[in-house]
Image 1 (tube, rainbow, N blue to C red):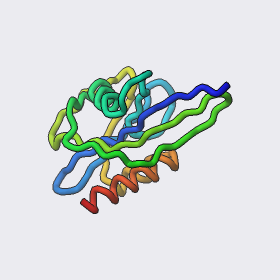
Image 2 (cartoon, rainbow, N blue to C red):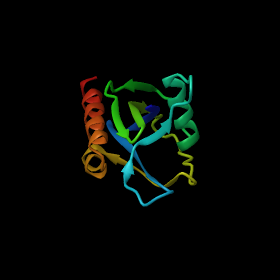
Image 3 (cartoon, one colour):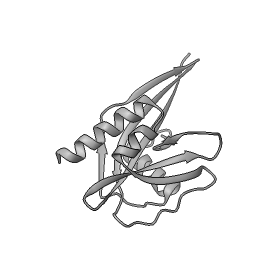
Image 4 (tube, rainbow, N blue to C red):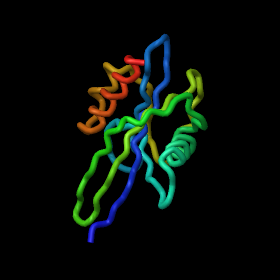
Length: 139
């Protein structure tokens, strides 16, 4: 029997000098690479509620100016567990100070697209940030 696990990957961004900068995080638990924020989706929890909860508790940004569904879920099968990840963009206020949960994240940085894209290890993360960046420039 397959168990399903839902997670949300949130690409937090803010505008600086008219250009989007993306928040990249590095896990504190293991040697890791740069990643967007990711948080589990609780049982019977709505996506938007989980996104706002995750961003508020993990990096201290309580409200978004804009929330974008990237409409590109990804699925992973690991043994008997199927992981479904939902990708979103979350616009943080321009000068909002972060309060990053240092028990979960060892480092963080804001990066422009040209620096953020090659910093992401996972192909799904790269595809998601490309889509978000394109949507931001199309708007």
